[in-house]
Length: 218
Length: 261
Image (cartoon, rainbow over all chains, first blue to last red; front, side, top):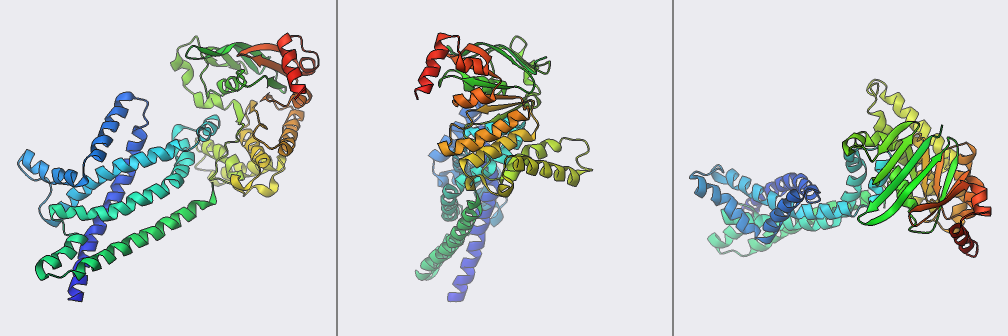
């Protein structure tokens, strides 16, 4: 049974990885944009963003996933996600990207606000544009500040991918669980845990690497 | 003609008037020191000149060009704010060096970014960047930091950091160099090296405005002194005269308190 289970878990891991990676690809830039907008001097924009972040952080990710996956079909009369596995993964990535972007936005805002005002002013008196100040001065200092809280969120994301099981996406936890259901085996559940631990272990090493890379300045 | 003419500058934060009817002029090649107790509006005045704060009233004219006129619609003077700022250099009390760049990169960054706007940038990129780098190195050498060019700010002492900041402000060749209490954040034994550099700039006839608490230094280096209190200029005149023989009662009180330590 070992090899069939391993093979099946590898399949599940691939789906888990896809959800994880795609969510990061979309949620990181989206989170940055939301974070910047949340500091907008234009009050209506700020309120709109505050409300969005409140709703997204204030309701369960599982609920959001169910609404995004089933909602369009029930409201429009036809499913906007294409049938089968790929549609389920797409819906999951959409729900996760919105959810994680909101969490990221708060971390990014904290990171940007943590950069001393004097840095921006030094850029201003040197005739830099707002864009130049952001990309050449603020951004890297912000990244350095957000690495530790971001590592928390990213690790949580790995485990949150298991929520995709609720819309029957065949991810890692689903894969391990199915052996218990069909064959009454419990050891694949522990084996599944090892997969998650390895995944998170690699991420931890990566984050330590990034922290060390950014250690050259203070 | 004066290189800088400031007329009736006022700054209001709500109902608080931080600056009131501040007027002075500065000749090219002269150094002006601004003294006064904390909260007297010295720093706000410098920040208004650099447009880090927008004055509520008054005009600022540099080399005959009106950079700011509060009586004109704001759209008019807000445009080209970036280029207008380049008339002034600014050295901050807390240095504000960019921590992720080396000393040399701190000095050359702004110049490199500005060079990108030149029409011949694409064609002569390598040569332009090389010139900027040489210029930066020369400035750091002038500050006595030839052996510290590739150090990051956190690897430098406070005095060295402030000298890098001065080189950075000089890199864009401003008409007027402003110092906002350049030695206030330094340990006493480090102030000397920074004051020496500023003295050197004065000897080279750099036009400067220096907000400072170092009275002896102001007397020696500055041509003119302005004493501010409560957001107004109480007394202004020849540096030695203001320090040695102040006319106003408030100036006398302030200076006595200072010499008594």
